[in-house]
Image 1: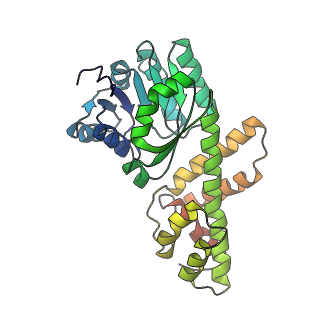
Image 2: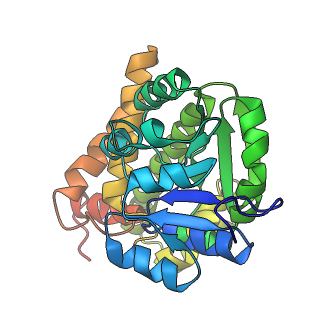
Image 3: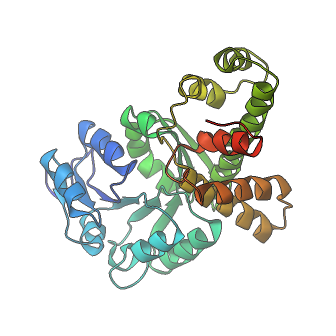
Length: 301
């Protein structure tokens, strides 16, 4: 393919090849897209190059290579570094480019990037994703996107190649707020379930049987059903770590404070995870928070 890609599959610039970025780019390559990639870890870039991607030595090179530039990176600080500055995406993007950030970050930093993009006539789409690394590998993620509608429509074929569902939710930062609202529910569910399970355990219930009944009850959400088997086995391998959940719950609380929304429940959940990651649970799955509640209740193991 040329640097312009093909009519149906334009060249994509991609920044960030972590747990989510690697499988997502793999699916884009399978779908026939020409993808130029960059990551701070050159080994990841090389891995994708062996699978058909084109490696770039820096962010500026990615930005200059395509009209659609996407990133999925850890946090606000990383987004600021990637998007802004003389070697960042905005300064080096082509005229008429669209920059799509799929990270979970604050509305505040997203607005800063939006403003910088507008100043250069670059469209900016906020498009965080929901789903695990397993769903990323299967191209079954959910995308929440907001920004200029024509730019979203240009990017939709890319979203369709990496996700099962795509929601356009508004012209500005609505996708950021939706992602944080959902992550609030996810993080809070883990703590609520941990307390409920510990109460049942104290009451003499069998662990596996209790989980089976909860999974068949009115309280069972898709999230709880998804976590039933790992919980029964007490398998806390990290699909999403406690450290990552602490970061997201902090974003939730801070966004609420900035918007003037009382976040009493979110603050309590954040505090639970803050205490937990200071122990031995930092890199375990966030549903392992049940271990902290059990310990506080005097239950060992």
